[in-house]
Image (tube, rainbow, N blue to C red; front, side):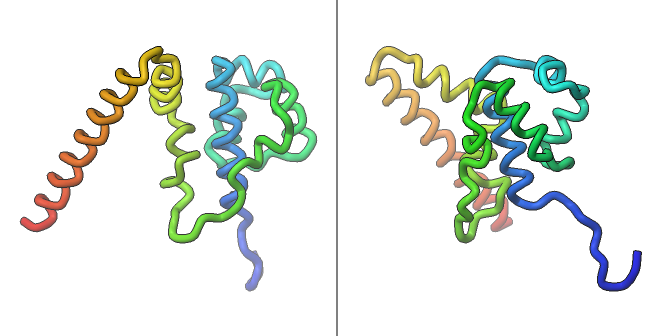
Length: 140
């Protein structure tokens, strides 16, 4: 490559769109293979879209939105940059992990507000204990 020419790579928006594709796919309970069949690509290609490794062209993005039965613009949700936050630390990145989405869906399906409150308190306590352990290990 000549001087001044940079290699194109995924932008933060490419990564975000991939995360949104993954979230919508998981919500529909589709595998990467099933989504790939619906849009005419391999599961590996879907995987690359979701990881933000490969950019999704406009035509393919329209196919993805149709296959997932979501408005096209929903795949761009969260594109407004948030100061002091890395893309992999965003709530959206957390939701793109299957266990997080399953936990959230289960939490939403709990019938009792008292049970939700107890579970939330447990999770916050575990997170606080973990943060204390991390700080203590850094001081050593």
